Image 1 (cartoon, one colour):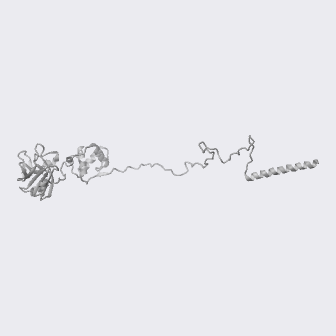
Image 2: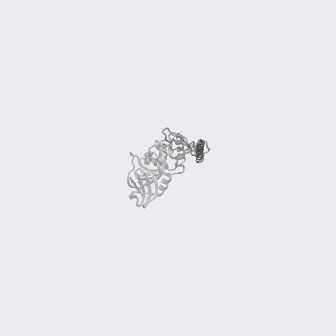
Length: 302
């Protein structure tokens, strides 16, 4: 009996060991980890996986592991954008007018250059060598490139130093367009003189053959207005009253005549006559003198 009981115990122990060995082998194959009993008697929390690190400060609040991808090293050879060592130069200012140009805008440029004493001749409307030199002087004085061409920067500087020129500053030396002729000029042969536009038209039967700039008397010696006739022509006339030459004189009212004036040619509208109608273009008045006859009509109007 004793030997039989001992044998049964030995057999039970061997079976228990076999079961435990099988369980250990199964755990090794399946990768499971045996748990331990917690303090409250329940299963303890399994240990953290070795490949999951602690959540970094500021990481996800739900406890999930943040990305473990390593940051790209600074010197990995990937090119990064760099600021250009040499800044792109600004485009040059736009050129508004240059030598060879002409027109009303060039007249204004010349008139403004006269206001700041860089040009002394009256505006001609042609961007000539004198205008180019005046622009160069103005540019150099203000530290601008001395190109002689009027660009937008030069023009703005000049505008800031000058005022808008008036009509007779723009046409100080003549060249202004003629006004529409007085209706009394539309028939016959007429010297049609307009005080408003300061022009003279030589007209035949309503057709203009010649138009020239003219100058009149001052407020103290005004040129008379009305309809007259040429009563005397004197090619080399000299005034006995003022002792001044009056070439190509065509008298129409007392001592008042249409004639060439060297003073008008030199000073423009800065001066005035003693009542005569002055012409500054000597070639034009010579041609006119050859065509006009005694008895031709003269109309002087505003």
